Image (cartoon, helix red, strand yellow):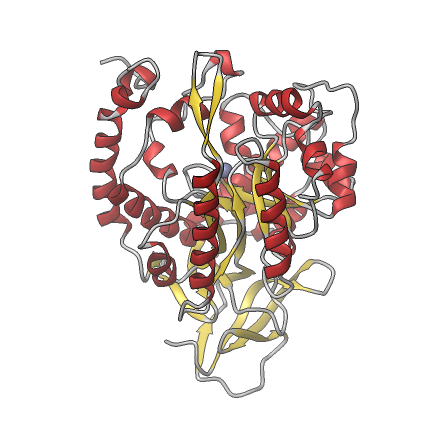
Length: 477
Ligand SMILES: [Zn+2]
């Protein structure tokens, strides 16, 4: 099956169709696509078609849009990071772990392959991949079948843990400029890739790891090149304190003041803002700054929830008019599980069920992400949109009864229900298997690299500890 000609999904039991303003259910309809574009969503398709798919036991929905991920490293932290936190750093283990545990190049390549497969198998068709530049990245992304925004990391400083409570920064601005120049080169190459599915996203790594001039230059480059722009911001209390120490402002206030926020900006994670209960800053202007700028937030609940932290809260941001999308910051790369957790945590933090509902979270995971990327042709099933389409299996026991198939997908079945996936009209998952990726072989390679990563910890850790000392297993042995 190729992307040429027309494919029609006939008599689909359920369709999440786009009506121009929102998704709505259609019953017993057809979806047709020609090449990489959807040409029909609704009643019987009467035009010519080269291929036909029986939709009688399928829920047809748009592919999900994941706007924040690190596929080249995070799978290596399986079994390492889930219980790992540092009390002296307000429970975040991010800095200690990223300094002490570094994955080698073969491991990164294997991790990417595993993560891409996992993403396709949960219905993600567009991914923002924020990683270190590598020689094999574009080939791997192109081969996967995913639509990928390539975000090569650059920064002017590297984190270093000084004491249990101390985060230090080793500055090297000349190196940061070389990385920035190389990131531009890699983004240019991505956009020339023969797959036609790769684009660039400008990614200065963290708000506190870059100089003001680099952040200004990154924003200027994004606007000149019409590329989206992203960074990590308001992701820890340590970072909040560091920006206050340097500038006397909240991180969001600082970013707004230097012109970093605009409609092209995606902020991961914008969680520790001034009015968050863990911050209790003297004012509350951050949500207004986000709303006024048109910036989007990449919401990734898992890593924070594991430290006992949560956004406060999804419904509040949305009611203020802020565009929210979702991301998979850590393993598992399962955006449906993130949707479920985001709903539950929003309700817990708000203390009410109406903080967000399933339809609103589906919107964030589709058009919310697409809007963040400036794309009105993604995240929706409508004529003219890209043929990025997911078919869920209504015969899978986890999807039955499918009285409301979206709810059942998000709350019960998740990735188990994903049967077929198309990107640009090309099949990338068939019969629940990725067509262009081999996660089993990659998993074996990643196990070897993870062992090397843990063995190397004493050389890198500020206290010279072993990997097992930094992250003990969950049961004694
Ligand atoms: Zn991240």
